[in-house]
Structures are given as structure tokens and as C-alpha cells.
Image (tube, rainbow, N blue to C red; front, side):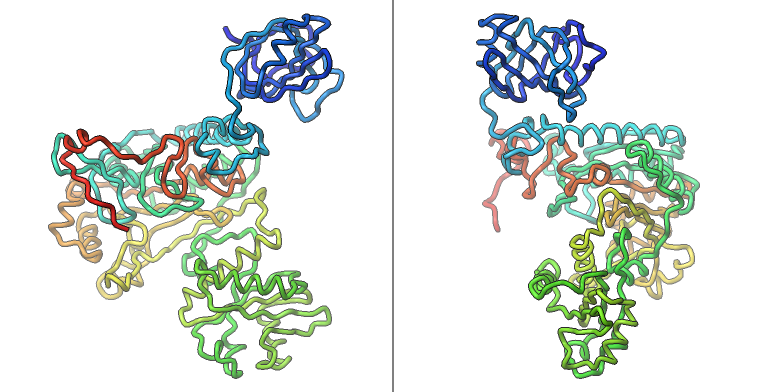
Length: 587
């Protein structure tokens, strides 16, 4: 064996024992006739001591040649340290080395393998195998491992079976773009990589597997951002003979269990329920961060009709109150105005009003409003002395609410109200079943085509499809949608009506989803489920800003793996076998 113990295991109780350790050199320090080396493995760091007075000049000379990231093996005796290091679990002991073996030398790494590294994102992604040696990165992967184990324990105890579904499937037109795979044995035909196992888990319900789950890779060819990767991992779940409350109860129970098991936090259940319409009205988001207030207040009745054309011509005027922010300087307020004008937010400007210590209100549009009207504004919004009122307006209420949502989150961050150690969970329910696209002049499924409408809204499918609510739900934690799902359509006739409303001809629907619609004719049970984004959930538990940091080998924002240089060109011979011909790329 290369080692008898690990670099994180030894304590004062081991003093006097002879041990063999193996690992990487974190750093080396030379002091006169002694050389100190920090040896690192996955489990921790242990200090080694090469004492010339004990082991002789030859061994110390050999130790002095060792560099960072060399892989070595040592044999030595555990002794108590004179200068203890309280920052290390092994900081009370050190190893008096008797023998040294170099298992592999190392070139000088391109960045320091430490938590506070000097390597930028691109460099660390290129050498991801070195980045993963850093304890802060490794701990994210360890958390992910424990998270997945806890999920399996909970679902197994609840009677769920883990069933694998295919990775090479049929391309479907709804949702994000598919990644497609050419078939050599079926010329000019393509598989798709699954965006989710949606249809297969429904087929498993038809098959009588009444509680299914799978921790599964999914693929979507979409623009990337901090919480997206082209390949990601879902905790995919489905249940038969359930209604919405049954699903919510099982999975808020799982969430409570995960918080307790992994963070030792007691999260109360049931979680609050909030309708989609309420979430949009109060927060301008279908995934509101409810760790803090700053709810929207509509102030059109107070601010219209006073000669300020921006407000007088607006369809919607919304305000938020930033507590204690009346002290913001003009420079800070100008920066906020620039923030809402960014293309990602899209507002044309911002109006503010301060509530002074004496209760008077001063605004950026004072010349249009009397103090009496401004006092009405403060009363309407609930602003107190020392608070700052921020106001946005426009001709499209939903658009303005989304802009105000971005401003609310920015203010929450600036005022320290988005504490990553605090968690606020809720369910957002009653989403619209459809969303209308002006460009194509047709309805699209807000979730997917298999989502059931609310039973009481089914009559509206013919008369007013836009008013139909979905039997759908999202779990939101700290403003992050960690999972979502729905009760599914299990009636083939209702499913056919859905496809018709989504613009599918009967022939097209049969071509794309005939296998599922046919299965429904053979006794499909009522069923529903949801899928959690495992990467998002783990990153939330780890306090990360990006899911990339809890994935072992992620892609960059251009969808590239810069470590292995993928995607890449393939040989002409492979192209010929696949009956593919490349054309010049167009921008």
C-alpha cells in the first residue's frame, strides 16, 4: 500500500505511531537544517519535517529539491508540533520523516493550487484537473455527492424506483433546441439527446411503475448564463394516482430532509403557495426572492394627472421602498438609473423620492408635485423617514414589472438583504397554460405540451385559451427556481386538443408523439411529477453564484470545454460514414 492513513486523519492521539503518507506537495519551507513540507490529499493537509540532525544531510538535500505538486510517499513518526496551527484539523501534529520516495515530479503549475488562487476563470477551466485539487472546489463536489445520496435515500424510503431512460431519442419541436446525433446505420436520420426524460417517465406510469425517479443527464442547446450549462443533471420524478397537493407534499418533505441532512437546518413545511399572477404583481417575477420585502406598490392613482408626461402617459407606475436608503448620494442614484437603462433591464429612466428625517419628501421630479402629493406617495408605499422610494413606469405593465424586479434584486443585494445563509422556500402555482407569441402569432406551452390544464378551466380551451391555468408548480428558493413540474394530461382526447391549440396538425402530432398518445389508449393512470435541477440545488446549498462551480468538468459561456477543446472538427472519413457534408458557417 502506498499509504497507511490519509493527510487529514492524524491527531494527538496518534503521536508515536509510524505512518506512511502519500500525496501532493502544497508548499515547502526551508529553515536552516530543517525543511517543512505541507502534504495534501483529498482528505486534508499534514505537515512533514525533515530534520538534518535526525535523518542526515542526504535526505534533507533531497527534500529541498521537491517542488509544488510533486507526488511523494513518506514514512515517518507522528509527533506533537511545537507551533500548533489551529486552522488545520491536523495542526497539532507533524510527521518526523524517516524516508522519502518521489512517485512523480511535477512541472510548475500555471496557477497556485490554493483557495485564494491567482488563476483566472479561463486558465482554471483549461487546467480543470488542477483546479479540482483546490479544497474549495473539491468540497463542492463532495457536497454534490452527499446530496445525491440523500436524494436516493429519501426517495427509496418513499417507494420510488430509479429507472434509466434512453439517451438517444427522437427530436421534438417544442422547448429549447435539441442536440442531434447522426445515425450511421440509418443514413440522413438523427437521434436527439434528451432535454428531459418527459415522455419516458409518463410511459413508465402507463407501465405501472407508480413511483419513478432518476438522477439523469439532460441536454439543451440554448444560450448560456450563470445557471445554465448545455448538459446538466436533473432529479427527475413521476408519480401515479396523485393530485397536485400529493406531489407538493412529497417533495417539500424531500427538501426539508435535504436541508436537515446536509446543512443541519430546520426548514418548516408546508411551504407557502403563491399564484403566478400574485408573484408577478407583487415581485415582477415567477421566481421571487422572498428573503426580503420591497414588494411592488402601484402608484398610478397618486402620480398621474400632475403634468409629468412620463407618468401621465404610462399604463403602469410601480414603486418599491428601499429601507434606510434615503442617504444614497446623487452618484449612487445615477448609478441605479444607469443600471435600469442597461439593455438587460430595458427601462428608459427612474424616478426617486427620499423621505427625510423630518418626514418631508423630496423627489427628482419635485417641480411637478406638491408636498401633499408626495406625502400621499409615502403613505401609499408605506415609506418611513430614512427610506428611499424608487419608481419605474411604462406602457406595458408586465414589462415594467420585470424591470422593477431587476431593480428590486439589485437593491436587495446592495442593502445586504440577500444573505446566502438564509433560505426562503415557496411554491409558485397556477401558471398560465399557454403563452402567446406575437411574432409567430400562435400559442406555445408555457411548460410543455403534456401539462394538464386546471380541470375547472378546461371549458376555456375553446373560448379563451390565454386564460387557462396550468396544473403546474415551481419550487423557488431564494429567487432560484430549483425545480418544477405539473400534473400531466392522461386522456388522449385532451392531449389531442392540446396539440391542436399548439398548432400541430393531427398528422404532425401523430408523427412526433404518436407513441405516447397511443399508450394513453391502454389505461393511462392520472399522474404527475416534477424535476429538480440538481446543479442549481447544490450550488444554492454551497452558496455559489454559478452552477459551473459544482460540476466537475463544465463548459464555458460559449458552450466549449476548453480543457479538451470540444466541440471540434471530425475526420472526413467519419463525415462520409455519416453521410454528412459540411457547408461554410454563416454568422
